[in-house]
Length: 143
Image (cartoon, rainbow, N blue to C red):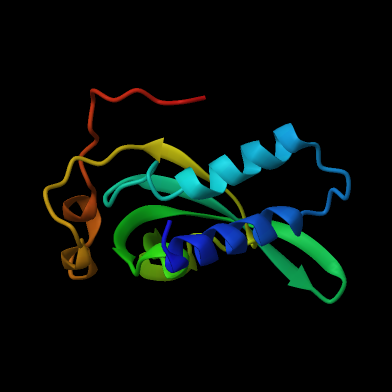
């Protein structure tokens, strides 16, 4: 294991330990660690996802859902992020999320997209039916 892998491992363990549950059993800690490290492998460009993002306003905390297509991944390791695009009242909205952020409560896969590109920036110029990504039919959805 090289130095970067060790630093990433330490950072992920800190993210897991910052959970609101003070009493974490080793099984729960290992499960959270697995979820954080597998988060980037579960999703691909073109997938329609729901991202549950924690927002803190004053002393209140709430979860806001952002549903859209993943149009790109950027970075490597701890700094890896994904860009999600959705149409809201006819206006395109793009948002960048750090993949290993503690503010992301969960990422839920809605459907897989059938695409052949690494970046889907061409969707910015499209609107209506031409901006819809076709669904990949044959894939197994985990529950």
